[in-house]
Amino acid sequence: MKALITGITGMVGSHLTDFLLKETDWDIYGVCRWRSPLDNVEHLLDRVNAKDRIYFRYADLNDQISLYTVINEIRPDYVFHLAAQSYPKTSFDAPIDTLNTNILGTCRLLEAIRMCAERDEAYCPVIHVCASSEVFGKIPPEKKPVTGIHEECAFHPASPYAISKVGTDLLGRYYAEAYGMIVMTTRMFTHTGPRRGDVFHESTFAKQIAMIEAGMIPPVVHVGNLDSLRTYADVRDAVRAYYMLVTVDPIPGEYYNIGGSYTCTVGDTLHTLINMSPEKENIQIVTDPERLRPIDADLQVPDCRKFKQHTGWEPQISFEQTMADLLEYWRMRLKKGGHFLTR
Image 1 (spheres, rainbow, N blue to C red):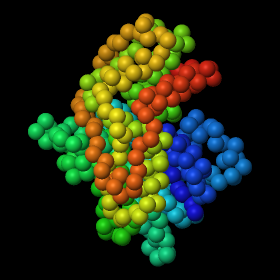
Image 2: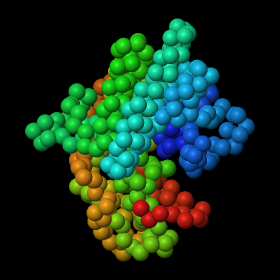
Image 3: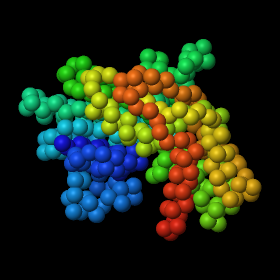
Image 4: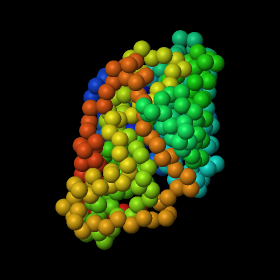
């Protein structure tokens, strides 16, 4: 069996690779650009060099020919489409790039798969299209569900990124319905852990705390909106869910909310991390206006019953363990040396 992962060098892609190497005998092909940073897959590079079940292939979501070439060469049995311009705040500054990469890039990938399947009727891969809980956005108070956001809640995207993920979500369902392709779409809610990018709130908190502990910056943590409510999942639970999505009776055109079981405000997350630090008594919190979005998705609490009932998946890693591992990840990164942005 062959699995193709777009965005293999990202947090989720790298953890998914770790999971598949351990739990399956599949060969794993990672789509990456020549300029993709390799920090998250550094521990895998010896196996890549030895061609030991991991192979990197060049392709770009903004280049149709490169995508078709990769699909036609590999003919993967499973496709995990994780690559995206994934930073909501960045999307306010670069909306066109975000929409092009995430919507048209997804279309280009699915079209490449469709074209290969059209030439070979026996080819029918199982495809996971990764949308986002951000599609639900800023839900009006009168429409907020009592039990959490379920799959049929209306989309109300609150950023160009969220709008792009609405398009991604709908494209996945369209290709399943129009062409009979086995495509499932997920709306994963906040998921984090080691290798999380430092532009996301919980990771920038952990990074700043680790830098304070190392004496690299003054004992001040700069923050944005601390009132937003989030439900957290560990990235390692998330990739296990993605594996179950494509292997447990995949239903073409289905779409699922997936998320953790621990809900708190962003401010609570910050205080959890601070309380794990020996410098907790000295750390001050300062709001940085540059870290605030023009509009924020303020309610991110999922109803995941549909996915759980279909697959039997349940989150296993606690919120406290996830935060401890994230903080330790940044401590280890800093110990390796180098220069870091204080973002």
